[in-house]
Image (cartoon, rainbow, N blue to C red):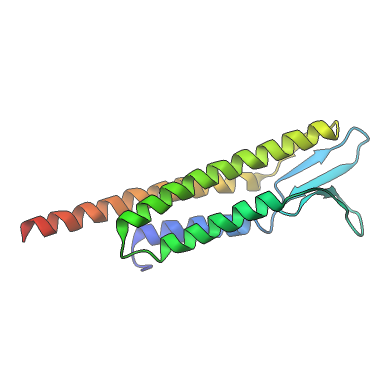
Length: 154
């Protein structure tokens, strides 16, 4: 399973998405100068002892969970290459959707708080995962073409 390059690409994409559970996505500076943190839990005031979540990040947590689950199923479907390709394409669409939801969430919250937002470098992780998943699709396609050409010789 892990001896094939596409499994390594998919595992790298999985690790990048799992890392999003532990890093902040953006910081929002309110009009009064207060700094809000935006991560998987939602948006809350930075530095508070018992932070009250202003906007829940449940949708982002669900998105991340679905992406991780689809990626795990994709990795363990190594015997069914066509299914792997389809799941990988679906996973790419989910990761692009996740990036869009994070951007919308940050910009909409910044408007409501009359502030400005700045993204953390961790927001690049889903885009790198998209590239790794695309590379995995190409490698899976090459494997499938090789298997079909060998079957043709027999």
